Length: 133
Image (cartoon, rainbow, N blue to C red; front, side, top):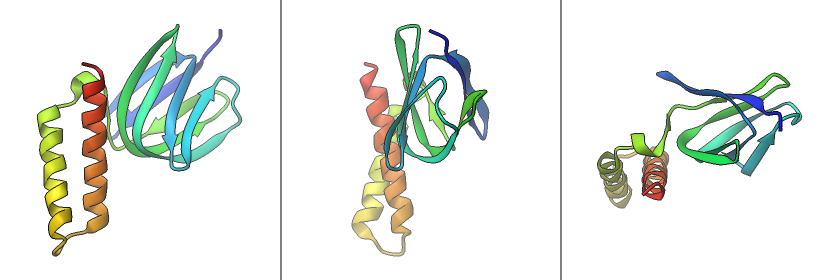
């Protein structure tokens, strides 16, 4: 089965660049499976996971939202953050979750939307890291 080129970039690194068979991402309106030959598309991504399928194997990574662009030549994902499960510092993620929950409980002089996003990112990172174990 011929695949397509997938590139995932963050502000600090090229996270992934290989030919793959399929990628599944979480768009803001639900999951989106991308195969070779898919119609061109640009859409925002939600905080969640990326599933990369290649040669019968699946790799999962955590992403902090972003955008996906599908062209005839390749699929590009741009995100503020992307991490493999083994790269996630679970202790740090749990601390971030706790801080966000405390801010949301107090709700005094905080940016509620920002605290909710921080909480979602932390929960996503914890979930992805714990799935690998």
